[in-house]
Length: 126
Image 1 (cartoon, helix red, strand yellow):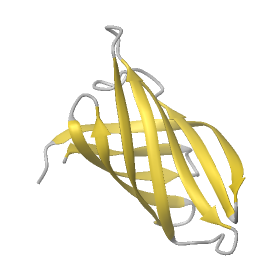
Image 2 (cartoon, one colour):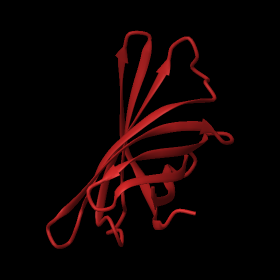
Image 3 (cartoon, one colour):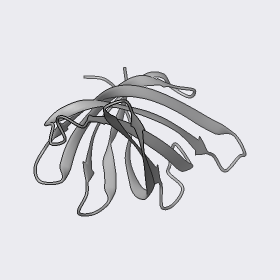
Image 4 (cartoon, helix red, strand yellow):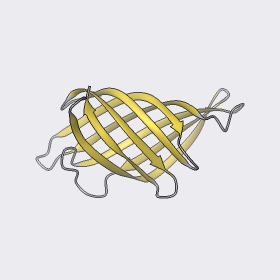
């Protein structure tokens, strides 16, 4: 099993939607409510693409870009891509792989829940 870096929980901040051909592209902004033990004050944007001909898809692709602002004035940047899959009513399971500037290759397993407007999960070294 891979080495666990940290658990996380982010809260919904805002979203925006735009058209790209027959796709609806949704950017969702998330943030920590307080300083995280590893990532400090974290701000993340996830991007989903939904096709107009399949609005109730059971799965799809997702990407994320984020940064953590640390109390010492430095920051961590993270970039990941992966997949989402429906996991109940208004809940999705997310698997992401990519890099962050602190730990290098990383992956995460997480859930987003509409009823609580939270995104929570665990980050591991890849």
